[in-house]
Image (cartoon, rainbow over all chains, first blue to last red; front, side, top):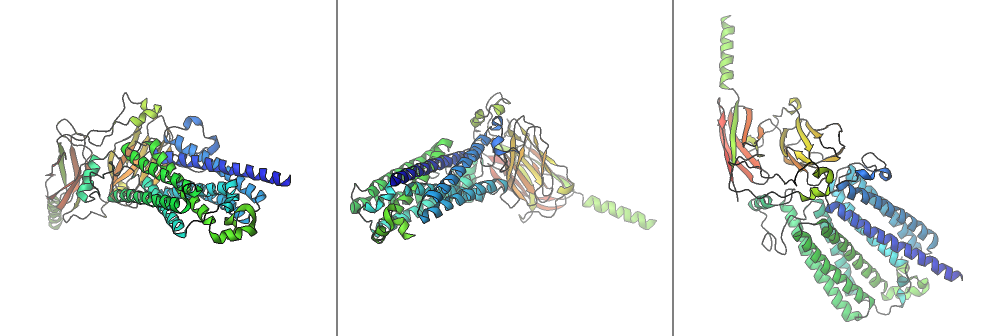
Length: 345
Length: 236
């Protein structure tokens, strides 16, 4: 009976972790809408909103860009609250020490993320906006990891019989690193308002690699619909973003092929890798659509969200793959049914 | 007494010889300028749209019927093409004014001196945020300005071309402010005319800069008479 109660308690903890991860995902969407609508600085004060307490800011004043920025702040407050509850719940009910640390890390990260968002506004510091975007997606990965670690799949992971070859794991972790780099590039592009620095796709100003000479830049700016002056740096940034996207597609495809060969098509990691590849494929399409739609806010925001899902999927793939290693499997027996990640800590 | 009269005559003669002159001219645009973009996004803000009969457009290319080219910033460099520095009289100059009217910045192109006050007004019945973004090391600002709120005042210490003013509540709102470390600049009006006043004698490079059409230069020598310099930009 006690065990059943404990299992039910863990199930509710898992459900709450999933809920918090979903709320975080929606928060990323709200943040994406803020930058897609160029509304990041539309509420110049923080933590107040136009001098009002954030929670008492009249709805009648949520006009234009304020709507996106203010709802982002309110939703962020909710995610902060959910994360705090989750961290306390884990601390009280989860017996794994490393999970308590992860819960604490989630709490600290959500506080840091909130302060970063606030400082970006009151310091009028665009670079902090880039850090805010990157930390936000990292936080989302952490919340999804907590959802994974509290779930039944993780408890049963030691029963999965195939080990993942080291070469595949290294390739996957390298690819996740590449996606993280791509995330930084994307966040920098958003901070630089460089999403439309190149208005065509797949060509770039009709070329494979666009001319960035002074004459060419003058011509691009004369023709540009972008209110912000286009710079050579913005163009190079977008070209690197496109190139890294292609590299990511190739590497994730390689992970799928290797997983299929080494683990078999029915292995959960092979299926997850195929889902990962589908996300990357969709993400490239959304990137192109963002440009061709003249950076329509909903498309650009979906591009941010699928990017976050790609990072999260790759990161969880690596966590699961590394947890299957022979070394940790041997140790699993002495650490019970919670899986091998705990054994490594 | 004779000595004093001689000194007075000498002073008058010297000041006549060294009299500052004006540089004037007309900027012309030849050909058809690119089409302006309708600000359809304004339709999402009923309070702004209520101030317009139809959807306004961008105003990147303000060209009159005979090619009179407005919003060209004309300024002086040394004869060697170096920036003129340390000549600002901004602290004592009358403030420049940037207004927010109909959810648009007016004027869209403006030029000031370092240390000169730039007053930003909100003539609209709605909230704006005044957000300046520098590319040359001037501090960025972001201030709320409710309807009917007092004017905001800014000064910039570092020269730069096209410092951006934007409103993030209404993301189509932009103005570009050029900051010079001298009083030797002007912005062409709707007749394409400009005047740079009280230029000391000497050789100069006159620069005509338009955000979209690019930049042209001419060299001039200013002596004791006003100088005329015209520029013609052509459609690409």
